[in-house]
Image (cartoon, rainbow, N blue to C red):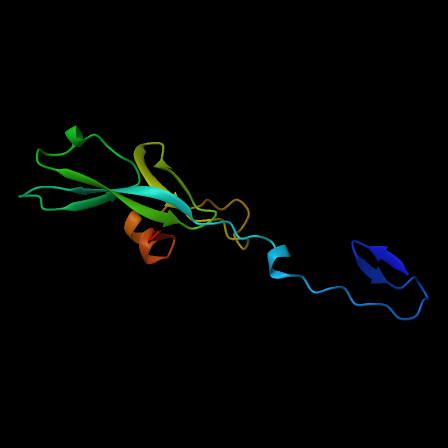
Length: 127
């Protein structure tokens, strides 16, 4: 009998052997945890009365007077990352983890805060 990593296997032509031990859950590959990130909610005053959710903090001086900013705790799915949408656009967007079925040479598309939430790439952090 050959013994490899605590498991017994028959020698070639040998009879009888113990089957490999089942893989215990703690031995299975670990799934990466969701990453904690901060989302910045900007609330603009009247007459704008708009709300923007951004992946980065911008100076309030870039907004109309009276704008407020609130940092919010979120989680980003494993494998996702933040990056620039395009060289000519400074806005950060979320890029979901790469799917193995993607065609070679295809380019990942970034998504906005709202779209990332709708698709399940982001979720509010609840400790």
